[in-house]
Length: 132
Image (cartoon, rainbow, N blue to C red; front, side, top):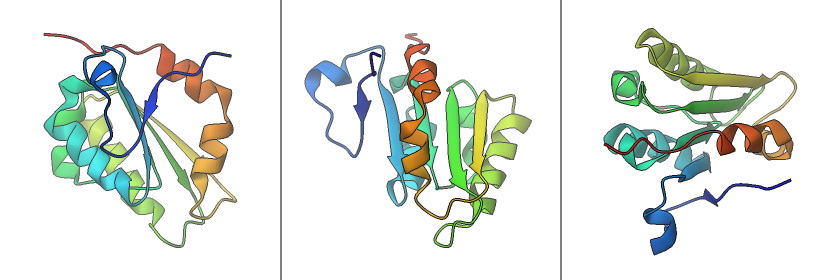
């Protein structure tokens, strides 16, 4: 199966920066930064995948046009699942396109389950950036 370009951190090669298919996946602690970056520059991304993070619900309006799939472990002892729940609800309330997967028996390492799921890569490949 083909896996899309996944970029983490702030290492964006020139070819990726100019791509209309930039998809961004992050896990805590970078996830909060991802949501902030997405809210400030949502037009730069085809989709984002915050994992075990959160964000400021006040930024939800800025994320409403960006496809988002959030992952979180229900037993997360580092970042309370409420952080993701609040952000997901705020994005949905603003008319946003957000998926939310909760792993009932997983602690903080929900990225292991998320990255092992072929559906994540299929979902990412469906999205392209909307150039304006």
